[in-house]
Length: 168
Image (cartoon, rainbow, N blue to C red; front, side):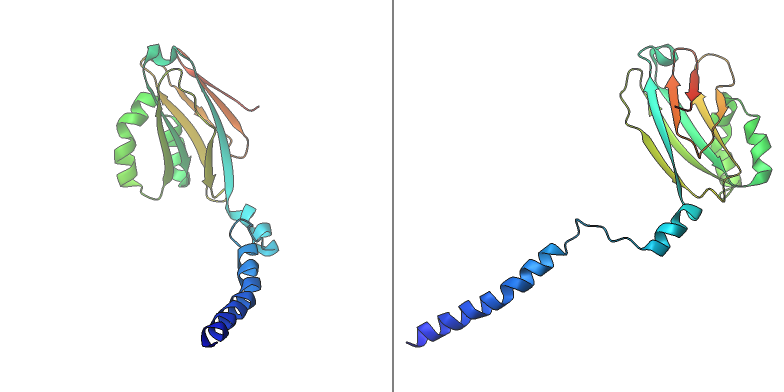
């Protein structure tokens, strides 16, 4: 008889906990809570540049292409960096990063010809950005540099001799 009483109390305790467990599971992490104040303020501080990338099978004479996206924060750096050809940028960037650690932000990639790339999503603070440049390190001579509007979606096409940018 004593075992029956104990078993019954465990069953009633389990029955009492079942609604609590169900409630806890229904509040799980799959649903993201939103805060209207944060959702209103967030665009003032964070934007996202979407960079679609297409790489030709014969890009850069069938060799990998290094690509740098540079968001410049220091207005004194905008003109000097904007005048650099890609070859010069790739030689000087390490020193520029040491000299101006807060002057710009850099995203670096290296892609091989024909590689399939998902769109790159780059989060940044639009209030800090003074200019945005893209450099591609091609074998052939040329500037291989372009200004980018970070507030627009950009499509980058890496071709055989150079690249092109489009706003789809």
